[in-house]
Image: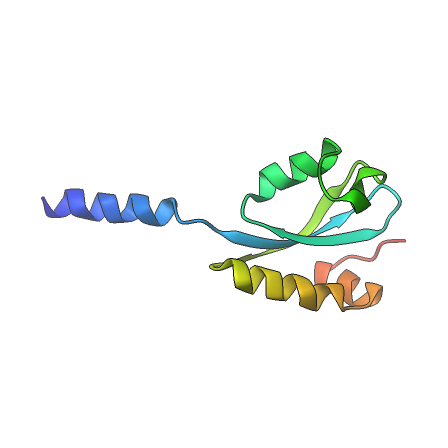
Length: 99
């Protein structure tokens, strides 16, 4: 019985929703920052032309950075912080230099 309970707790933890703040590099070499709770799906949505208006005319996009958070509020707060950064600061955060 104890093992069944531990397995149920593990399954609940695996199903826990994660929230992500992410940075995309667009085809024109600009950077787009957003947040989501389904990172892979969101990138596919962007590349299908159904994401943010900004990225629709700059396809394809490529994920260059992401962070994971437990709450939507944390992810949104981090998105706002990153959006206030300069391009150089964003490049440093991503660990890349886009020419």
